[in-house]
Length: 339
Ligand SMILES: [Zn+2]
Ligand SMILES: [Zn+2]
Image 1 (cartoon, rainbow, N blue to C red):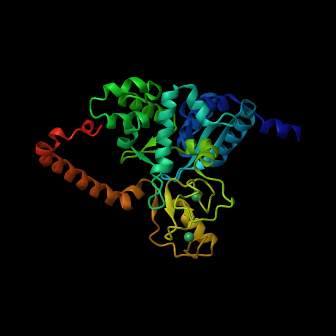
Image 2: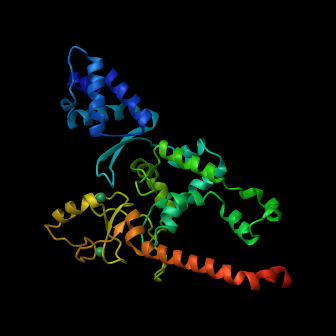
Image 3: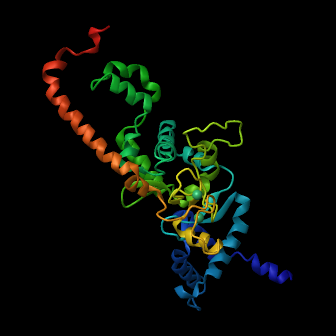
C-alpha cells in the first residue's frame, strides 16, 4: 500500500526536465512530447534506450498527473484543451491564482495594456456581431488599433497637421505603429496570440484557458435580469460548444442565426453520435447543414467579405469624386467661415 503510494508520488529527474521544457515552451501536445520524453528518459537511464514509440499516451498522462501534484503548491497547473483548428489536445502550464491579464500587465506599460485591451475588444465586440462571429483580428486592423481612440478622432477632426490639437491629449497617447507591432509579436512569442496563415490574430488555446473567466465577465452580460426586450446587442458574446463546453472562437454555429448553439468542427460528429445520429441542432433541432463558420472564415464567407469589397468601391468612388470636385469647390470650403 505505502510502497504503491511512494511509487505514484515518485518525482524524478525526468519530471524535472520535462517541467523545464514546458516552462520554456508554454504549451505542448502529446506528439511533441513523445520525442522529448524519449530523449529525457534515455538521458536519465542510458543503459535502457527509450524510443519515441515507447512513450505511450498513458506514460504521458502519468507524467502530467505527477507534475500537477508537485506544482500545485506553486499555484501552477498543467491543463489541457483541444486546439480548435488543429484539433490536437494542447497542454499548457497555467497560473491558477493570478489572471492572465495581470501576468501580461507585469511586463507592459499602461499604454501597451490599453492597446492589448483594444485588440481583445476588436476580437470579441467589433468583430463578433450577430451576422459574423469572426473573433479574430487581421494584422492590418490590429496595427490600426495602436492609436488610442480619442487620439485618432482628434487628429481626424484637425486634419492632417493636427499639431495644435496634440498638446492637450498627452493623457491617451496610444502607441506608435512600431510599438504596436512589437507588442503583437511579443504576445505571439509569449503564447497568448496565434497568427494564422491568412494573417488573423486569435487567442491561443492557452490564452482561452487562462482568460476564460475574464472573457466571460468582460464580454457577456449577466442574463436572467428583467430585461425581456429584444435587444439587437448579443448578451452572450462568448459562446460555448454544446459538446465539450469549451469556448468556441473557431468552429460552427447553428444555421438558425438567432440560436445560441455552437460546436467545434472536431465536436460535430461527437454531438451527432450522442444524439443517436440525428444531424440537427442540439438546441433548436434545425438540420445542421451548411452551418455558418465561427472564426476568421466568417470574415471571408459571411457578410464581411462582401462588405469589404463594396467598402472598397465606395472608398474608391469617394476618392475619385473628391479629386474632381476638390479643385473648384473645396478651395474656400473651410469650416472656420461658419464660426
Ligand atoms: Zn467542442
Ligand atoms: Zn439551433
